[in-house]
Length: 614
Ligand code: ADP
Image (cartoon, rainbow, N blue to C red; front, side):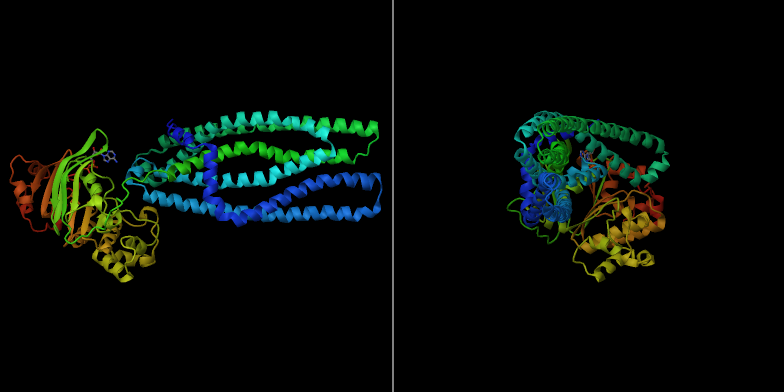
């Protein structure tokens, strides 16, 4: 079980440091509401203590001394106390719930903002489903930490102190005896809290894995069905669920150990008090009011004392979750803009890779002193076997990662010295997998450029050959596209993502050609759309289709992180024994008509396998 990664999270922040941080980040924001809530909680505590204290007069004055004139006053006082208690409880509960909801919403936004800031390397190593599940589960912990502390201190602690006050005033000796149950309770709490920490952490992680796996399965359901993976996956998830189930049971049995202990101790104390007090009343003929008030106070003190005893345990659980959230919020964002970063100024869009070395992990180089030039307004096709480093090159150009050595220049400016926002703003990227996001078709095109007008969006859709099918949708541009655009075909999704790139109107276009085979009509429409968007832009395309390669102004052939050949189709094909010539031959490209550099017709595309050079 890979649960170890949480150890460092667990140890990274002490309980008090964490508590201080949660308070400093939140308390001031809700100061007014907290003050009102605390006043209400104090009222609740005070009325609780009062209802015990008044019992002495109820019994002694009404029942023993038979003072009829006091009856209405005492009844009014009791009724008043309960009314105040009811109203105060209501106000504090609503206020604390509202604050809690606000905290959850704020942290959700903060966490999402942080996820947006984190580099692609974070997502490359995280499982999205698990991440989402653990974030959801963890954020409420911050609310719980605050609310637990406030209610425990303001209501339970004050109630307890008030009731102990009543006890001491009515009988100090009995109070001392009753308070003897305190120390064993505290010892038990400390022991249980320590045990609960590990189990809680494991439970949280396992639950996140279960939720995450379910989400992944839902996303990939077609593959699951196609490979009849249902049973294997059920067994796997069943195992995870069983593990989570055992942990949850363990958690219950450990944390509930408090209950018998507190009950036994409280039982002993209450029985002792009744015995001692009863003896005094019966044998010494003392009025029973004081003993009754004492017993009432002791009984009422039991609940807040029990809650305070559990506080540490509940807090321990909440802290485990809160730490995970802070761990995410504290993650360092790599490749921040340099302090003196300037906006990128693209006039032509000439791209130069100058002896670039790169490795994802130390000691495993992926690019070796790679140099290449993508001329302005021209198309440069990158060709190479899978794993050669083509996608890496595209990632580096967008500064998802920084080179280990060497430079990447756009119009002579080192991209390390420019702001990431301006760099990415000048680049339009069409990925192999056409992602659609939350929102309508119009929103999805507008993600290309937030200030694009409706007219620009529709023009882009036309250029991307997307207009016809968009207008055929039930609500046209306003049609909501579900997760992964489930109601649209692969080619349609691709054309929307091309429209997104057109709307961006950036001078540089990065294109990762789709390898998934589209039907011929669809492919032609996509290709037409791409041809339009490539026109006049500096385009770097990871080419999988021969027609793209043949028509590119320049072809760069990569092998194991190095450029091994460069040139146009005609020069490369003429190199006997060259890598490109071999690729070309392998794809049955020797037909004479494919040597023609004019745009290949649709039939040619049909003849050439689309994923041929991947
Ligand atoms: P291509 O696009 O040509 O198929 P890539 O650029 O995706 O090649 O990958 C080049 C090499 O880098 C491969 O060996 C791949 O395993 C490795 N690689 C790609 N992405 C990562 C990553 N996020 N972390 C570690 N290694 C990676």
